[in-house]
Image 1 (cartoon, each protein chain N blue to C red):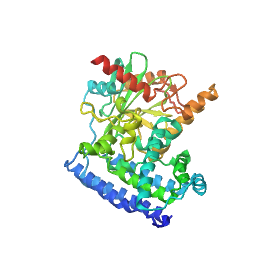
Image 2: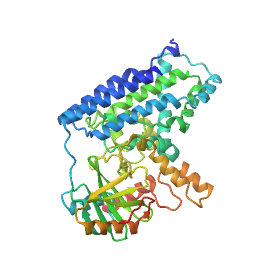
Image 3: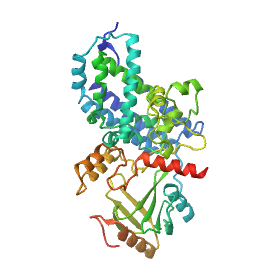
Image 4: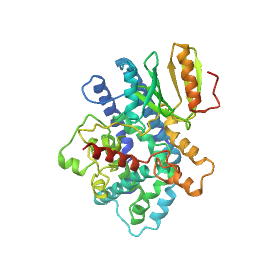
Length: 303
Length: 145
């Protein structure tokens, strides 16, 4: 049995390798050896956003940890820190990640933080660095409470979440087309994650998995990458800036503008705050469900 | 905190390394739109149902405006190697300004700082400036066309 406090920070250990692989992909892309679309301003924004994200995690990352610690102090069992408990914790944490990620796409309060990661129109390893600055304030850390209440040590949960995050780095690439079928069936792969970053209506709100693709298959959000429809990356309404501050906060500014409209009822204001991204009281915007339905109709008419 | 500082230092080093790599290997310059049909094609990719009545392509080919049948104005402007495309209608808060040979559009939208169209013909510049001013909600920075 290990001591939970002796667990290393795997993200920190992996950071130099992330950078190495990104530089390698970039170098090969510039020499046209592999398919990877790098653009200087975009890549620099990704790295600047990453620096801001790390700083913000340091500042506000522990905001809701009190709730997790409270749950652990009132745990129903004592789970030892061993290799099998790590595996169990990893799988359960991956399920937690699936729902966290799905929530981040389905409600605007959470989307306002997560949109940062999707706002690049490129898809390469540097996009993996483009992480939210404000996840700490959204309250999603409380989704760790069930694991802590079950008896998994918070350090073990954090370790499993870090390993999950490390796994997700390599799926942000166009250099790998498809992997063996069994692997594509079980795990998140570059192909599945390209779909997740797509702005084509058919690819919206799909493939939320961190590591295990089975969650998407189980909960009906799996969409395969179609050869006849190449993925177009970015947002439904793309942003026109490379400024890290604007990238980090643009959705909050838009959300605030929507909330400040005159004459809205409380229900309508809550709709803007917690409803699906694209929800509006007068139908001026479109949610992804509306866009997907319109796309399906067009596709059926074309047949 | 030391770990955070370490990662931030690594980030800074990587940003400098990437800038150096890009500088040494010189990424190709962004493409320009060759003619008005190319401008319309870019706009139609985003708004397939839009019906254009008139259009103007900036002299450097890096931006363009489209007058639409429903009275709105379509904007296509370069953003790095991509095009940013939007419809300017009464909901859009936009200020227009003429700066030398360019028509500058400035938005209240936080994620759309500004767009610059080089239009050497003064009459064309003024006409589009007026059209946008009539179509959109004036921003506090609005100047006379």
